[in-house]
Image 1 (cartoon, rainbow, N blue to C red):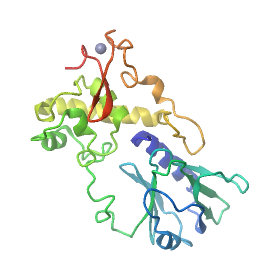
Image 2 (image 1 turned 90 degrees about the vertical axis):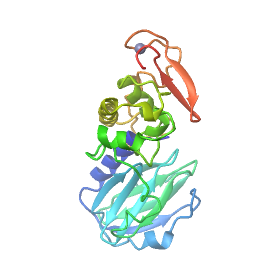
Image 3 (image 1 turned 120 degrees about the vertical axis):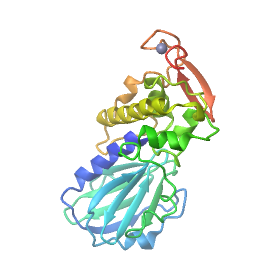
Length: 272
Ligand SMILES: [Zn+2]
């Protein structure tokens, strides 16, 4: 499943493709069977508008126009690509055509993705956006703000930092990697993480996400950049998917266990 760095890499690709701010000339729906119904009429109302910016909130891509926003979530297997006539594929859901000849396609074989519409200035009221927690790369996520959220929580720290109501976009891979970097064992109860360790953890989350974005994300499942290239952060995983292998810091064998239903990896020497 694409996590925040992969979605941010796609955002940057879309932003680059749309930097001339072309107007949308046509929107075609090839399939209508994503996880939820697609508000086709509302999305069609964007024809004639220019994409003013491509933003990201959590793992949602927001293609903004003056008349409303096209919201996209990649689900498990969603991809955006630039394409030419004749390069249509099975499982393409939507085609956006622009006045400068640019064509964008959204393709999603497993159909867990989302295409939705957000009215102007209504992000904070939109059902998909209104309950989201701190954006990890923004100044709002600090050791102090995380610590305040963790007080009284009964879950483990790994489950807490993957909770979208607390902090968004830290999925299974980057949660394991950030906890290793911060030397915090994933099973530690959230309420026992001190303010000082929250500072270290927040710094680790920001660092790991930024490194992964710089590497173009991790190539996992069907994730692709807009260019069709794969990211290469997966080659730098310190603990994720390395059960039984030697810790890169101390040589101890990496442990693995399901926590909150998700595979979790850690070094029992480095992380306490
Ligand atoms: Zn170690």
